[in-house]
Length: 176
Image (tube, rainbow, N blue to C red; front, side, top):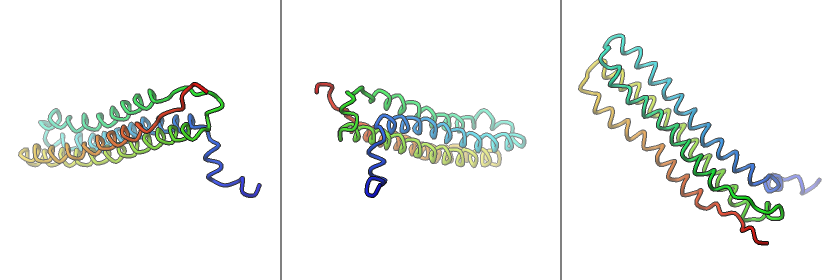
């Protein structure tokens, strides 16, 4: 066993397609989790605050839409990452170029997924405070909505970084 049982040896022996599939799954799965968590936070505050001021219900649905956009970011990146997958000959599956492509797609999915998780939480918390503030004082709605837009930009930053990282994914050519 000796030096054969190291983490680096184990990671190199995992198929790059497995890393790619995990990255794509994390991009969509964790993004949807972030959107759901944000909708839960915003929705519960919106329903509670609407008891005091029913006028806020339709106006504050924009916060739920911002949370849903986080899930859409994950779906879009998962589609982009899926198009990066290419078939390679069996002899080149573990070639350095294949490993690099698999790791690039994996890292891209991880970054997008967790950026969107944090973005969903951020937008959910700000949307919750927006609903509660709007119920108390309607002049605060637009001011807090601007802050919510900035929070939503975190997800876009994750998408941009994920697309840039996935550009590094180039599989070996089929000619051997």
